[in-house]
Length: 328
Image 1 (cartoon, rainbow, N blue to C red):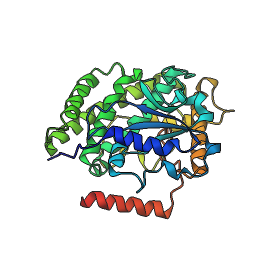
Image 2: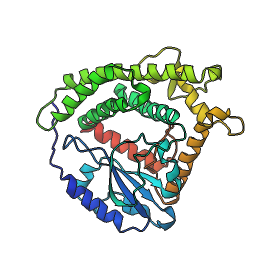
Image 3: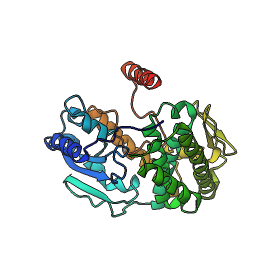
Image 4: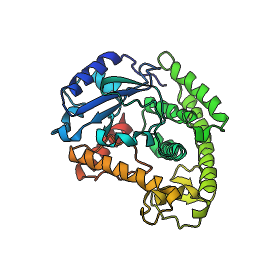
């Protein structure tokens, strides 16, 4: 049976974290995306714009023991941290959506200034899709709390805002079911079987999204389909779209994404320069985060999971958290 404590004071959490951030001269803006539609389930999504030259110590960004448990519950993950010097490129990572400015300078994120909205949408869609398909695999899915499982379903339903997937009719029915699930979360107890059925529906939607991506890649990049797809120990690239619990599988055409991102600018066809450019922006974002002592908070991972060096301490922490999940 699934039911969790919904007693979160979101306004108090915002105020506590904002007070902490506003003390640092390196914080340029604090921006919130989305709304709290399901108290107790929803979390607060923030984008923090920084001037890295004015940040000596990034510890103020961490939600450590100095903040309340209420605030930690309201912010289930660290905010996105993005440098002001790269703000001219922010539209390559965010599909325009409503937001609320809590602090500082307003960069008008409703204005779409992407140099190629189609490439932006397909890369954003691929990045979220790849992570979601991996999380739906049983070994990963079972490590998620029930709350995070529902949050995963909500994130899959959000693909409906991406024009690349506008022809997937089933995503509307899926969205309605997930809205029902989310809205009932505070008052209803969900059985494991009910959530398992939603997971099955989610796998169907993810497969349709993959099919859509496959069609788009074959249409737009047909001249590159003969390129050799580099083998990956974490992913099997297959001719057909399938879902396996044992290992993440992707349509072979999607193997072009890492190739495109890592193309040398001098050898990359001009019409595809968008990809190495976007990759270079994430690298700059990563380097700045490392310089100020952060190993999390990237604007996007582009489908790569090795942006930050992993220490022995990091590995031990991951083992500890896995054990905690398995025995909770």
